[in-house]
Amino acid sequence: MNNISRYIKVMALAAIMLMPTAAQAQEYVPTPENLKAREQFANDRFGIFIHWGIYSMFAQGEWYLQNATIDKNEYAKAADAFYPHRFDAKEWVSAIKASGAKYICFTSRHHDSFSMWDTEQSEYNIVDATPFKRDVLKELADECQRQGIRLHLYYSHIDWSRDEYPRGRTGLNVIGRDKNKENWPVYYDFMNKQLTELLTNYGPIGAIWFDGLWDHDGDATPFDWQLEEQYAMIHKLQPSCLIGNNHHMEPFPGEDIQIFERDLPGENKAGLSGQNVSRLPLETCQTMNGMWGYKLIDQEYKSLETLIQFLVSTAGKGANLLMNIGPQPNGQLPATAMERLKGMGEWMSANGETVYGTTAGDIPAQEWGVTTRKGNRLFVHIFNLDSNELILPLTCKVKKAFTYTDKQPVKFKKTKEGVKLTVGDIPEGPDYIIELITK
Image 1 (cartoon, rainbow, N blue to C red):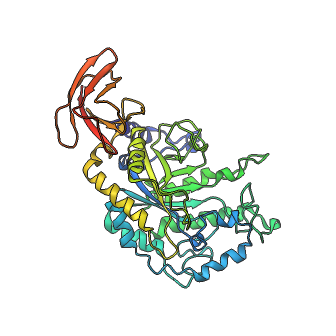
Image 2 (cartoon, rainbow, N blue to C red):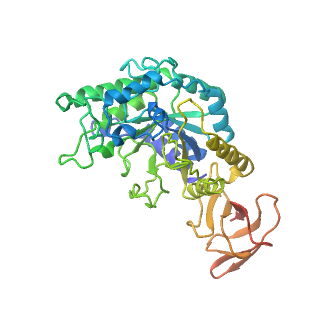
Image 3 (cartoon, one colour):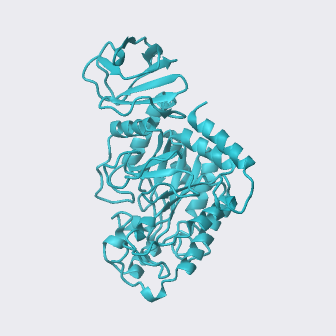
């Protein structure tokens, strides 16, 4: 039994045995359905993030409204020309499934306020405000169910266009907002009604992926986002729906997964992930090129080798990789992104067993690579080795060693430093995998 399974059984037993006292009523106790969903999420290891909205029309990334210092009403006119006639949910989901990804996280509403579904809470949505008149989220949700891909939904806690949202440290450059109309209760009610729609009308939702709490991290008086009530509402509507929040802090009560932005858990190279690593299932989000939303001049896509190594390194930390793609305004996934998905799918088809359902390996990340574990099988992922020998600082006993791809024996020897592997030739390729059977 892996650590996650053991954790689920313990938590499920606790959920049954806890007495409903007044004090405990305020505590978040995940349901058995939620715990099962956490285990499935942790086993998935690979998902695709989709940042798509009317900001794609400007081809300047998803923060264009904030960064360009323009009038929100002028920006909103882009909706009248948003006609993504090449959007094909089946094509999207098929390509993503073929990549080896197990779930999709789609931006239902980003900071610019535009909703990518047929919401009744605002006419500023893809059905009412555009000539396209199609509910792309509904089409995507239906196709995900047909193809067995879980659907997660990104939802912004902040809004640069609605006057009711109390302005924080971003969106200050947006022209046309009336500060006198700020009204948190009204905005909070708006969000909860939208979330209720998403969790009622679009089938099973694997997770709600929140973003934006950092907008008020500089307030003199801590801002009350009323997360407890909002989280409770979500768990009531769909008990198995996981909640994650990209707030760059340790998880709050009611959250089911921990998110890291542009960094592996425990690292902080991008400056957004200095928080401690919790015992919840982990996920790191990363861009395939440079931006989240579509940007015309951003063609510096990470190589297939880099993406494979990042995916494996994430699994080596015991976390999922949520790899982002920014669709074009016509509704297509960029050609280079499709190529990367195809390449990752080919690699995962051959090697996915060393990633799916694994836990963090016995050895922390090294210059030569990482390790992942599945039961008594330890997978040694070698990215870069300048000799045919490798010392592994292992304390467990190794019974067998062989190459994962062709099952050829690998010489190994117990030393005072651990276990020394000797391979015939210097390993090449993005990931040379050696499997160890341990005791």
